Image (cartoon, rainbow, N blue to C red; front, top):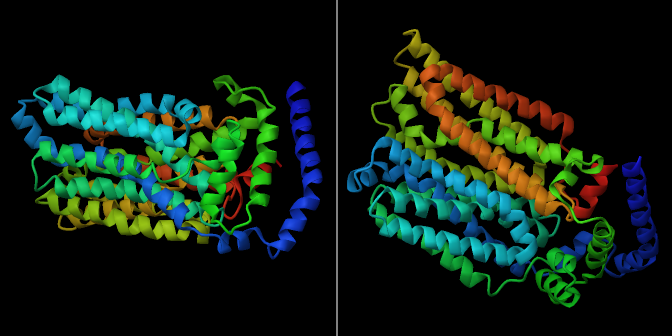
Amino acid sequence: MAIVEHKDLEKGEVNGLEDLERPLIQGQKVASSGSDESVEDNGSLWMVLLSTFVAVCGSFEFGSCVGYSAPTESAIKKDLNLSTSQYSMFGSILTIGAMIGAVTSGRIADFLGRKGGMRMSAGFCIIGWITVFCARGAVSLDMGRLFTGYGIGVFSYVVPIYIAEIAPKNLRGGLTTLNQLMIVTGSSVAFVIGTVIPWRDLALTGLVPCVFLLVGLCFVPESPRWLAKVGRQKEFRVALQKLRGEDADVTREAAEIQITLEVLQSLPKAKFLDLFQRRYIRVLIIGVAVMVFQQFGGINGIGFYVSETFESAGLSSGKLGTIAYACIQVPITLVGAILMDKSGRRPLIMLSALGTFLGCFLAGTSFLLKAHGLLLGWVPMVAVAGVLIYISAFSIGMGAVPWVIMSEIFPINIKGVAGSLVVLVNWLGAWAVSFTYNFLMDWSPSGTYYLYSGFSLATILFVAKFVPETKGKTLEEIQDCINS
């Protein structure tokens, strides 16, 4: 009963504040040609684009860390005399560091700000890469990997949140999708460069995006919503004006942000158990579920061991297939970024999940044919086609849309703790899938891919039933839609 009364009070406060603000807002709409979007169109976007470019340097760093272990395995094992199990620890410890980073990411972003969180993440990644470069044994190698994992765990939350909070609503989906685009770009670049340069030099290339990020953060504003949340009102208006352009009228947007924050900040400070209150349970289920479906569709198992998968399917060399896998991600993810604000989140993720289902089904069928000695000449071709269809479909939607949804659906008063939980779930899923992939393949290669295809089908059903469309809505309007 107390929860219902508090929710009713919250709605009353929102409605009352909106009634007080309505004459002012309506007057501003007339003065600005009657459209929120017209203000955005007339304003300068160059600062939003610059800020986004700087932030996604962290995403590129994320991809560099993820892609580092695949092309360096044989060289590192040979130079440092590592066993397969020791190298497996080196590869998987990244996700352990990322889980720790995920747990702390929300609090860090709330305490230090979005820019402060990115600076700290870059610092951890720099320390990690230098440690890997100087490594002379398994312990130092693992420590460096753990540091970079922690850094990207924080990046995985802070970057999409920052972009979502600075972007105009009509561009927010596409700009947030650049996070995933730069992750796959960083991973693909590491894949390709790692085939031609030594592993220690490849570690040094991981410093480059960190340097660009740290320098770029000196020239871009902090998130206006975070500044308003912590009470830095003057800086809030300056940052918002800087993002929208000197001649843009930001009064209406500033008023909407302030109204929402006044209501949200009147609520008690969010703790972990607060996430399970009735008014938050729907957004929590949506945020957690889309991350579970993203990971348990098999992306990290398929991606980490793609070369071995192609060879086990009968391809003479997995290198060509691996290069195709790496290169196809970037243009397809770019297409997804373009479609994000045209098609909407729901249609894009459902279409993507349908494609991952088809890809896994084809790959599973190829292994089934091989197991029964049928159409053996077609098996490698079907396996490669299935995996490439899978990564294409994943890159166009399943890779990016869950992060966009996560950055949009949580109220700002629980965004820190909820974001930490969701990112932790994502990394737990990444670890579980990458750890179990080889065991599942030993059990049944076809069964493994059919299992992943089942998760893809479940994604379509869940999104169709429970996930709201957020395209074209402000973060405040999204909350009204979810809670209505």
